[in-house]
Image (cartoon, rainbow, N blue to C red):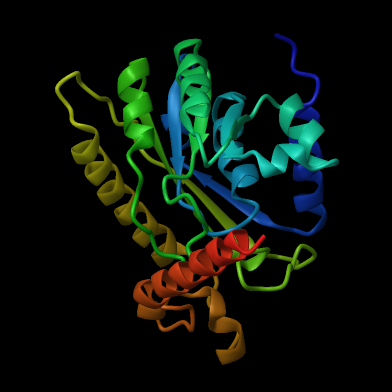
Length: 255
């Protein structure tokens, strides 16, 4: 099927990043399979992560990634046509089975499908708990898991912070790990633990090798607490997530 929307969107994004001198570093592009399906599994620290996570396979083998994203994005008058044109997969959080089935079908047809197993942006910028959907999709479709770690994207636009889409000279690391092959005997829970452990090591490396540090105390919000930054600890971030979820549930109930 011809791709009329996705490549121009990628080229436009790359042109914008170049204009802002966003310094994109792709590590491990050789791990992207040249052909066949794969479940790309990325951490989630920014609203722009699907763009950067997709750049890894594009830089590696000019491969396109179909991301699973909440269906609200597909209903937006601007993003909706683009998301559909790029053949991303809408997820209805009240009934995720159709999206799961669509993802497995795409994987079986040789597509790369992108998943954020934390489901929401991590306020601590560390890994949250992973859902097992990625491992289950990989097992059912007979495709590998492709771990991806992003770092630096939180400086551009993240939860609880104003947008900084015009911020210049931001380094962004896209780190791609070795594919994780599954066997029929592998249990999704155990595979997910192995995946998360591998990505935790990758995240530590990306943070350690990141070329810049906060300019001062007022700029340390994007650095995790255990590295001396002022981002919430994972425990504080989880409490904030729970409070936000409770407020949304109360709001829905009051409608």
